[in-house]
Amino acid sequence: MTGDSEVRRDGEELRWIESSGGPFVVLPASRLTHWLGSNGSDYEAACEVEEYLGLVRVGAPELEATGLVVADEPLPAVYIPDLKCVLQWQYAPSESALVSAARRSIEGVLDWQVGPVFDIRDRVVMFDAAASGETLEASEMLELPLPPGKYECFTADYSEGRDTAGRLHQFRPVNDFTALPDRLATRATL
Image (cartoon, rainbow, N blue to C red; front, top):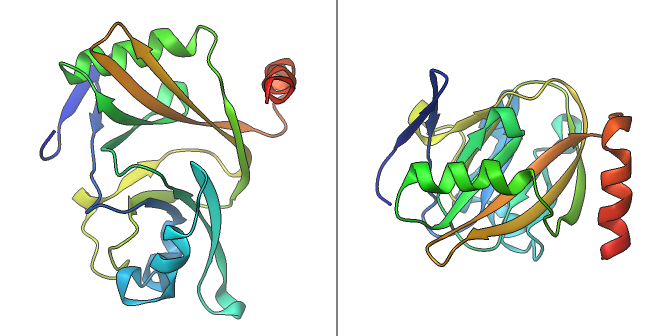
């Protein structure tokens, strides 16, 4: 996949971003200037995350914020609002096949891996962790339009046939008791 691409569903546009080979990071937009990327220790800390998702501290102690690292493979990514998921492209014949398979898979039984709890207090964006927050352009970021609150993060791989596979990173509100049985079932399988 090259460049930004779009998939439409009910008038919504989904825009893909890519990394230069390292992880992505999700950070409060108000703290972007504190992210130094490969010019500082932030990027090194992000690269040390061994799980699919992990937390990293950003900025000086008096202005410190927490970022969420989307680690592992440097796969192209998009945010799908109706699923509250970041979708990463492993392989597929087309974007529409990948996104449609994600929507079908999330309704089924997936082996969700439990990740960290991420506290969102204002607008958050996702971008290549190697980039400096000061030099990022709007086209290099994805906004994750999640309301403020605490989110438990989960990751699952899915596939459909032999030609479509992706990775989902889902954000579930901690106070969402309707998802509680699902979270308990997920933990019980680990």
